[in-house]
Image (cartoon, rainbow, N blue to C red; front, side):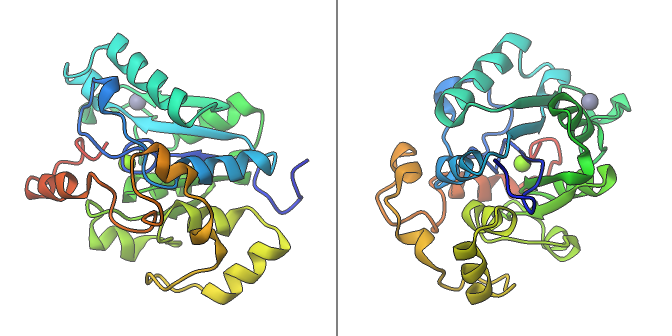
Amino acid sequence: MPSRDNPAAVLFDRDGTLIVNVPYNRDPGRVEPVPGALRALDRVRRAGVPVGVITNQSGVARGLIGAEELREVNARVDELLGPFAVWAVCPHGESDGCGCRKPAPGLVLRAAAALGVDARDCVVIGDIGRDVEAARAAGARGILVPTPQTLPCEVEAAEEVADDLAAAVDRVIGTAADGEARAAAGTARSGSPRGTAQNEPPAGAARSGSPGGTARKEPPGGAARSGSRARPDAGARS
Ligand SMILES: [Mg+2]
Ligand SMILES: [Zn+2]
């Protein structure tokens, strides 16, 4: 049973948050979880809090990803990191004027409605400004987990920033021990050493092919993602 302090649901962005960002990926074989993602998700699930995915996939509107290909990629994400209580996907393009493409609130509202909860009781965790803006627009709590693709202005603008998924989950899933960990870590945005979470067996990291103990280091896709910064494209960042 969820503690009364826990959120009604935690909604995660997909690309760059749960899986390494491969712009317009249509190949299930290229789905690679971010180190620590499974562990973070399982911790939320164990607390009795439903987890969902809210994802912009404008590659569909751009003709770069087929509807069936998107289903296959999402199925692979589900296989590696699921089960998810809800998926909310925006297939539209920037110019479609839909109400669901983040930073619009539609995906957050849709996911909350599907779960039968109030969006204002939900937490959104994502890697770029659009994610936390969508949260804010829906009345939800947003936490930014920056990657090399995250713009400095997005980090500055975010109300809450966490170093990684484990730290983000620390902020929302409460136990006495977690409270101590939070107190020890303070609210610093820097990568200061943290508590026992980093010393657990790296189940999530093992699944993503990383050696143990590297969960807090740069994801394997970091170089590729850094490379894509040379051509800033909000769509490519989903
Ligand atoms: Mg993202
Ligand atoms: Zn949309």
